[in-house]
Image (spheres, rainbow, N blue to C red):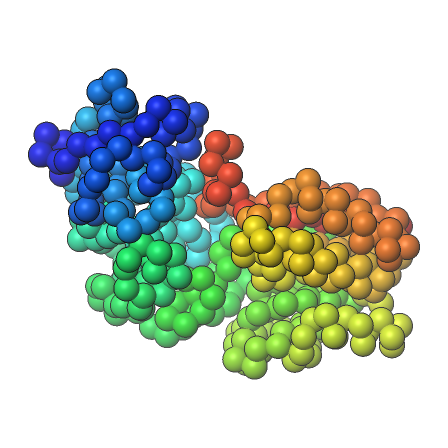
Length: 389
């Protein structure tokens, strides 16, 4: 879109300062005047100085998202160039399933592009970005050459943008199941119905690390296993893996995934992880390696106190089950739970479990989920590998 032909808006000094400090969002309260149409806008400060070009969402509390600081043409070539830059940064990844664009983390706010082998799953998560749907899809076709593009527009954030929520086939064909490789493990993602865009791609490096840390020939426990991505990596080293998952559909897919890797040492236990851990403790079961990858207990700031109790309890129970010298790989994907509080919770859980644990490694997001220091929203996944003494 020619910058000379787009609308101009003015923001407050506070809004301008937010951009200067490195955060790309400007809220409704810092937009001067009204603008009722979504799309690209030129942004000026109170003195009339040009600040950049932004995606405008008239129904959202986040009214502006910085897209480009220069007065340059935002067209198909621009989108293609940015996508190619993102893709090149993913070259070291040893997997056929990974995130190509991580929204604000890659300087492309509210855009998610995930690659699943020969297919792409895309999310356009703001009204401003939605106006660029066709040039973005065209650029994805040129850069990734996918066999099909699926729009996972069932994310709740689109509702806050005044957008519809549905899963929509945009280009070509996308199968119900896609086999992807992650290091030496293969598993099936479910792009139409699975969590997020079909799989939890953000935990990829931590799954690889968990497999490397697992005690050879030992006994492993994978809680909140979903379709077994952690369990599969653990099973390549451990003598046996107990995978705990309460979704019957996920368990069925997990069993299929174990089969496609020729693994016969993964055993499934349907049920609530809190209850199963308590049952295992009463039975005096012990494990050499345990993985805790729970869902986001704190989806809002108001839920944080209750979520911390849940994280504390699940980690306390897991620590009690660790064999001497055992390894616990634990994580939280709740953005509102920041790392200092996460680690304080782990320390409290260790004390309550009467276990002395040592921090082996601090874990986080992979290079396909870049975290920008000035945009805390880009960094939500935090974890740790702990050793029980």
